[in-house]
Image: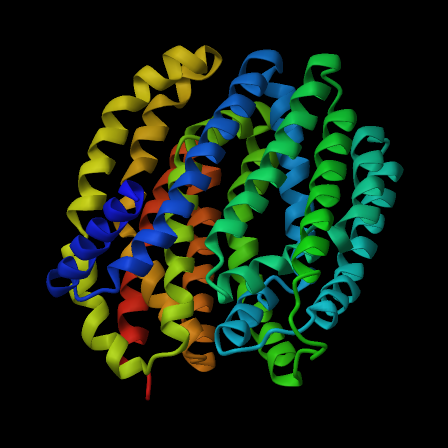
Length: 419
């Protein structure tokens, strides 16, 4: 009884606060609670993983491990990553049927990535690099399935079941981290580490997909428009995905595996924060999907301005705490401290994520193509110029300048896209 009374009082406060924020605070509080819980657990798991890798593996070996994973992640773009967002939009509009058609499309297109991985395996085999050859041979089997089973995200986000989404994502993350850390204690061989990570990722994602599919309420199948829009979003994401991986690829090719490790650890503390921001953006997608772009243009900028202190203050705290974090947990990577602090400034550019989400949810295809293409091409050009010249510092500078360009482009397309 007392618990119920407390809940009612909290709800009253949230309803009252809507007069100030002009936002559905009950929805935000419910969704944010689960997202925050998920991110808190994920942050701990990521820290455990990073500490294990940072102290049990040499920078050279870890750099090789990350370099191969980045290439595998790039090959996975053929698995139609945009299908998840398309499914989310359809589910938010009332679809409650099976996602098997979307899964089949993702796996079928993912076979292209598997074939390319086999070609890479043959290439490295000819060059006498047995580790890379075996790594990409394994990847050829895994790639078509690795990201395909994540289609469950679209269903749960569209249904606003952030509680289940949290539980499932924590299960996947915990299972993958546990498998990798156990392997790390047994061996420091790159191939065994890759095998455990890839196998655990596919296994746990497959389990979660099957659980989410079991709750389908009807026998309906996805319509052609959902599949078509998912392919559109995937094409839009291709250049951006390549751009997001290019920093590691260039550093690995120009400066070697150790530099890759230094750079990755400079970004590692940021990853949980950026994942939280991405989750908050995803929280807004079902809301945007049912609103007209004209209404979003009127309300979103004011909400972003009101929430600015919630980003500025944590950014300052992050920059101040980074040196202590590295000295305590990553003593092998103190050379990453300055780069990590500089990269922390990227947190200030979060508003462009919401504007891009609004364009995606309201199906502004042409604006999305132009916006994502400009952002990705600009990032690729910046990386191609600065990384060979300045190394890790060049990659960080490229990241920050890219965020400025992305913000300006998102502002333009958000306000000036035809209705």
